[in-house]
Length: 105
Image: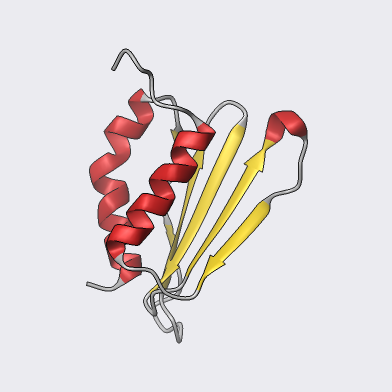
């Protein structure tokens, strides 16, 4: 499975959990089918922070994070190649920054 497909599956299987945590979720956006490097972009928004991730079939990933409360410009981080496990770790780290899990469960 290519990385952008993995991200689509991950998003689909975690939608309910992320909504319970208070994230606003949009349907992920796929690149055009004829794109040289197919990709998928997903956006996750909490009250004050946002996380966008784009994963390409090549294994490349770009994260953009923004703190709306600080009125800061987005911060972009690019990875040339990630495995699905690395992508999940990186994504969870950013989602926990955007909206820390409730310690009460």
